[in-house]
Image (cartoon, rainbow, N blue to C red; front, side):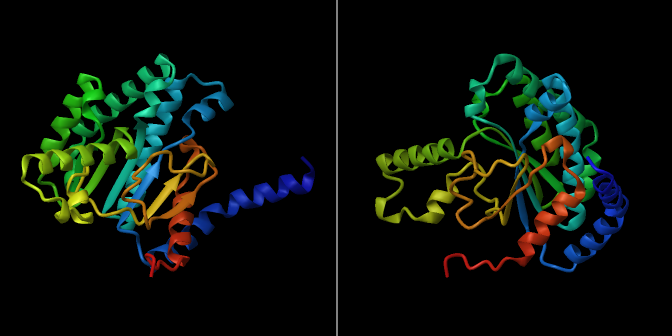
Length: 263
């Protein structure tokens, strides 16, 4: 790296706080997405880059995710959905799966201990996914947190764990087919609203903006039904390295787009 490169990077670092404040002021004057969903990606590559074990990297990613939630709530986002572990992720090496659920359990305990923050912000917690696939400790902790926060307000924090968009659609279709077989639903009455009512979180509005960290540019089986008209933003940084300015850039990019919903 030459001297000019070093000076340029130093200048960028010195200007970052000023740039972040400028960008935040612009974002706050624009339309804030009501529902932001995030594909949390890059923990393993971050671990490999720094020579960390996976458990440590997942913990750093979880801490950054809590900061991320604070940033979004402060900006006025009503609903946040975090894609933390897919149904396909169970095929990963056992030590990685164990590490993920250990960190999820730790963070659920922490949210229970600090639930006053959620109450103060009017945020309800919800687990989205195939609960029967989860360790019992995670199911129990998530259930306690859902019960504790159910009357906290109209905002939601949705944790997608053991979740798959195809599995969600298949589960909905099976339930609709069962109702048709039982005679409680006529085939001609099946429409988008009926389908939505059988999804894991039927009252959750479709995401306005989906952000994926780590530079990968795909949905990876996330909210396939709900994302039909979502705006997509792919962020180059790994989750543990995510900064507030990265989120501000994503929302600023969203604000510059013209949403037509097929019209």
